[in-house]
Every structure is written in C-alpha cells, then in structure tokens.
Amino acid sequence: IRSFPPRASCSPYTVIAMADEAAQDPEIPEVSVIVVAALYKFFAFEEYKGFKEEIQKLCDKNGVKGSLLLAAEGINGTIAGPRRGVDKVVTRIRALEGVGDGLSYKESLMNPDDRPDGAFMRMRVRLKKEIVTMGLPGIDPNKRVGTYVEPRNWNELITRSDVTLVDARNDYEIDIGSFKGAIDPKTKSFREFPRWVEANLDASKHKSVAMFCTGGIRCEKASSLLLEKGFENVYHLKGGILNYLKNVPEEKSTWTGECFVFDKRVAVDHKLQVGSYESCMACGRPLADRDKKHSKFEEGVSCARCYDETTENQKSRFRQRARQKLQLPQHQTNKRSHLK
Picture: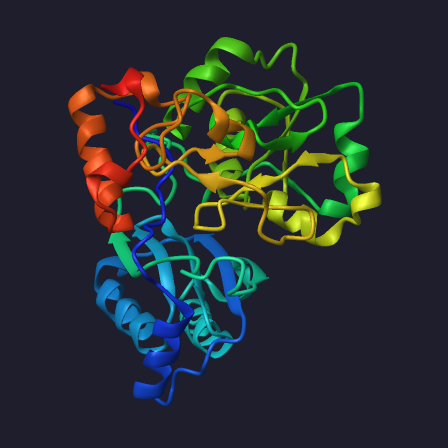
C-alpha cells in the first residue's frame, strides 16, 4: 500500500478545548481566530536533537498545534494556534543561530467556524534525516539553489516561450489546482521526483526550467538537484504557491483551482480561505463533492482512488474505526453491497 499525504486526525482539537486550555493557563489567550503558519529554513542545525524537547514544551504551553521536522539540514513545518502563541514559537525559532530573518514564513488566518476541530489535533516535533525527503544525501540547498522569483515577477517568467514550467508537487495535490501550462510529473511522493527528472528533462534541451510547490521548500531541493545535473537556468517561486496567492490579485493570477495544504483545511482558495475539499479518511487524498457520489466512496473506508489499494480486511477495519468515531450502531453505517 502506498503512503499518501499525512492526514490531520479528526479527534477533537476543538475551539472549546483550546478555550479550556486558556482558562487553565493565563498565558494562552482565548481563540477568536486561528493563525496557521508554514515555515522552513535550511541551515546547519547541529543541535537539532536537543531542540526537540524545548520547542515541544513551548508549543504545548502556548496552545500551538501542528508538526515540526528537525534535522541536521534545518527545520520545516506548519503550526497553528492563537496569535500570541504562534508568535512566541516563531520568535524562538528565529533566535536559532543561522535562522533569523532568513526563515521562510507564510501565514493565513483560519475562522474556527470553518473547521470546528481546528487545523491540527496535537503538536508533534519529530527528528528526521531530511526536513523534506528526496532521498539523495548529496543534494544540499545550503550549498546552492536556483534563482528565487518573486510572485510579482512569476507570470512574466512562466509565459516565456523558452521556459519549461514544472509543478514539483505530487499528483493528488496537482489534481485540484496548478498554474496554467505546468507539467505534471505524476509523482506519488517527492522521492520519485529525481527519477522523473532523469527520464523527462534534458539540460541540453531545457535551457530554462521554472518550478513551484506549496510553500517553496521542495523547490529548494529540486532546484539544487537540477543545478547538480548541469541545468543552466533554474528558477523557483519564492515562498511557493501560498506566497503567490497572498500577493498576486486574483484578476491577474495564472493559478487555477485550489491549493492543497497539509492540515485539516485540506485546501485553500485564492483568498487563502478554507476551500471546497474534504479529506478521504482512508488515504488522505482530497475529495470534492462529486467524488463522494462515486460508487466506490464510503465514508471513512474508501474513495475511488484508494478503493483498489486496500484489502477487504483493511476496509473492514476502516469501517469499524469509522463507526467508533461516529459512535453509531452497526446497522446505521453505510454498507455497500460491492464491499461485502
């Protein structure tokens, strides 16, 4: 079974729960709006193992949830919580030697009514070999990366006839939105991207390559990879799609659709508001309303894309899990004849 985008759990991370935390700890303010912050920085992080417990405690104390990845090559993650809490965590990260103002940081505001159970269930700080997994140890964005392109200059670049535009994300992300004319590598994970480059791009033919991803981090490594392979002009969108959507007016935008995000919002629209997609609770892929009308969709068990990837025993376990979450008796669950 392939692994798909990490799903934010549907266990209760509610605004009420956050308010209870605030009542118990005067340092955590009540939540009227949730700040969702995506951040990363490649730098020589020698003490990353020792930082794990400190940043975990700081997040917990300030009501901040989400995920942070720490590795010798840097820090990467998305966090969400009250304004003051997020600011305290980000301030501490910026204080790390080698980070400072170089931290790539993008935030959006989330109305608690849009996702009553919040953007994340808990805070997880994990130690990793890479903060974004390509699986090629020799590729180091700390040494060199492609040319950053500001959102205001992106449209002009990608409409040039000599530029090859590549979406560096995975297929389930590209399915719901991308830039017009972008190539879809049809990868299931970022580990597949180097093989796709080897098979589809030629430094002697593709003189100028422009790439983009959600927040910019994958393109740091992707551009470093292409430079290592001898490509001359390698560009990537600074701050990624999220930065573009924030800074380019919709009427001037070349973006179509919505942007997949790795939290319980699932996707955001051009205004960075919660989009129209939900998440398949079996595989984590985004689902539109039309997808839920498919004969192979069963709430909490399968969607059309993952139905053939699991066994009947697995579907049975997923069905039991769904019943437990819904706290419904068995006869009320959605049972389909083709799953029996």
